[in-house]
Image 1 (cartoon, rainbow, N blue to C red):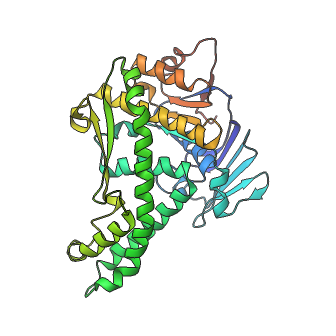
Image 2 (image 1 turned 90 degrees about the vertical axis):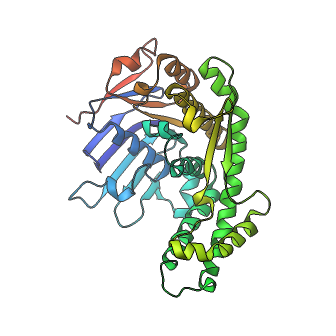
Image 3 (image 1 turned 45 degrees about the vertical axis):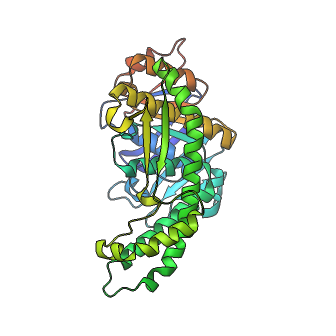
Amino acid sequence: MYTLLRLQNFRNYDDYALELDEGVNIVVGPNASGKTNLLEALYMISRAKTFRGRAKEVVQDAKDWSRLDSQGSNGDRTLKIQPPAQPRLIIEGKELKRNEKWQKNVPVVLFDPEDLRLLRGSPQRRRDYLDNTLSQADHNYALHLSRYQRALAQRNRLLKKENLSDDELFVWDLKLAEHGSELLIGRRALVKGLNERLGELYSKIAGQKHGLFITYSARIGEKDPKNQLLKGLHDNFNYDYRQGFTSIGPHRDDLNFTLDDSDAHTHASRGETRSLVLALKIIEAEMSEKIHGQKPIILLDDVFSELDASRRRYLIEHLHDHQVIITTTDADAVIDHFSGGEYKIIPTSQN
């Protein structure tokens, strides 16, 4: 839980501090006033990384540094961003080493309008959903993902080289197989866990019984994925060389959603899509609490305008005992769902 956040040279904020309530905080302001920037700052001070773009992009033009400071139940935290160096996280006066940062992460669940494009967006969006969820839950998964991405970038660079031999790729094939197999195992385990709750929770949100199921779509099977992936990379060498990129591996996989025996990607209505994503976010919050032993901070970026009254109520019922930060252009539309004055209004104005 955070009680205070200060931003310096961060996006559109020169030097701005805000106090936060332990319950519901409603950040109000017109479009382009910096509401999402406040959520980004909270996300960064929690995880030492941003959820959009690269960390260096948060630093204001003509400035060479940005800084975030927070107070709360997770101690006094400071995040210093001074490109090209990696963000430096300091807790209670001690700077954390790179391999210590994950252990000090504050669990946080972000829900923004882009999440509502999960079904009809690109496969990359669905892969990112899996990877972001798993990286916050498992430090080893985050390491495997980072190493896989580096090895993939190197292999793709080599595939554009003239007179390339299969042997030159072998060391990178080994790395991709080693780390990629861990991604496959982690993703499949997550999908299995989601399926245990998703159908039931979706039915409650929708108000009637439905069948909802996720399948993980991959060319690599579940049995011995490391050797399967290594063989697949070898067998696809000629094709990959002609195309100039790696055509097999977890970076090419996808998620398929089936709703009442129909392909949800093409048949789900707008309301059904919102119910599905809402269910996923609630499960993500439940999983985060179970793994970290504390309730995650919930960041809702203007999603109330995307949900109808019944879905808003369901969301609030499940998150009422979390610290929640909601951004909106219409405070009244949000306030109507909270009784007894159990909220704090935060304007985005810096004046």
